[in-house]
Image (cartoon, rainbow, N blue to C red; front, top):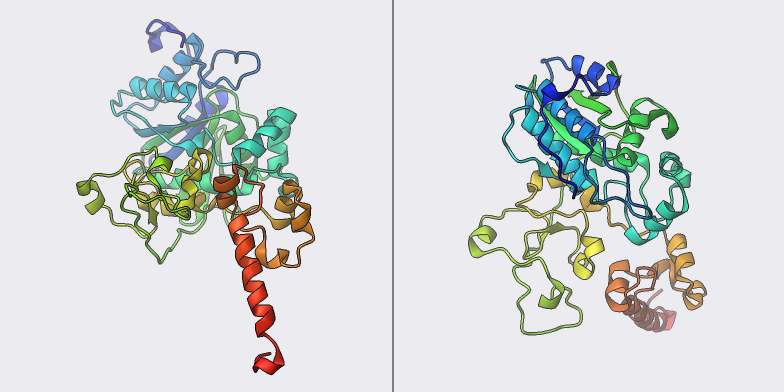
Length: 395
């Protein structure tokens, strides 16, 4: 990482984007605000990379310090994408504001963000088109690339995160993210479906608040009131079942168990932490809250899930992240699998290729069919076929 000498606000005149300065001027003290911005100016990406480790330029560091100075006395907290250019921005803003609490990170703001559902499949889309073209595909529900989520769905998660972080009236909570994550939100706030017109510059962004069910958004100094948006945050989950998986330290190695010790690199809660955990979802021994214990079959499948220590359960249930790992539509899976035997199977509509996570665990491929489910369905079908005859008294 490039090292820069310390900078102070007095080193330069205002370096903030004009749109951001107008937005800051409109943030009244009657509301609490969540300010979501793109990170400050960064170094250029090395050729052929995503630039995960690039740092801010000296100009970018001045931008972040000035933003902090303008938020002095109002900054209640900061959250950023885990990537270094975002964490560096949030730390400098906090320092400029005299806020001495270490900013937190959230992978919903980047790495992978709210629009990635399958890292492998979405990677093809990133390699095949420009970021702006990709964002425009997300904005049209019928053109979303495979392995990705629509702008409507992803922005619902962003809004849920922003509302959870909403501070007391007069205060501001800062969130630092990336252009490809912020652009769809800015576009939907503007009531449009063309991301090219709303691509954020460094430290451009939007301030959000709520008045009842209405979303208040300030962009470039203009206040918008948005009511009844179809992409507003989802209702909190209301689970009714608890699966508390206490430990993976079992001396057996049952094939059907996905919590064998060798599959859990996350560690385990100690007794005190475990006893203090009160929840209504599947909880791994590490404290991760997941919709299905089979998720541990892959680090990619675990992406986006948090421990109870990192993010309280109440916040996790208000987000749709726990519902993100849903199966892709059957026709999409069937085409991707290339499995001719499945295509001609009379049980396909009932089987639906089984569980993708089990397929990953057994075959190392999400596109493969679930062999265990296939055998189970065939066995049940043979039993039922001999059972449902009139002479057996059943119809």
